[in-house]
Length: 160
Image 1 (cartoon, rainbow, N blue to C red):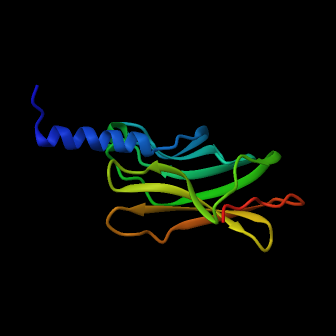
Image 2 (image 1 turned 135 degrees about the vertical axis):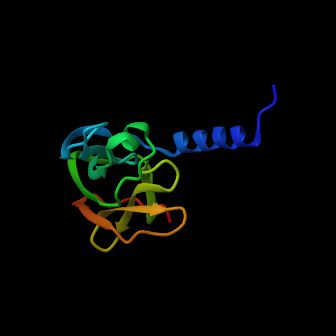
């Protein structure tokens, strides 16, 4: 069976998008704009446990576009996002951490934009710093939000 070039590219793109997404647990949502056809515009709050640090969960709020485009999954969501990470249980490190690591990524439009969370280690203060931002394949976005989790008496193991 022969595949066209467009089918092959579409299939590869679909696999790439599926493989590169981290999915959070949806905590709740608030409708912000009522839409006659399709879902309303809304703000969604999701929880993402840090994959390398047991006991830390990041809560990310972000805008999701509704309407017909939102229902079909082709709308571009706004770049606004906010983050709050908290210690919810005793902290346990699964492995030594790099100085900086991208730990979550979720698409905010069909092709062009992702909302990302990057973890950084503040060695001097023994603190985990989490930054959320949205990017585009073509140009960057300055919209971002930051939060920090103090680790306390336990030293953060670093992968130097």
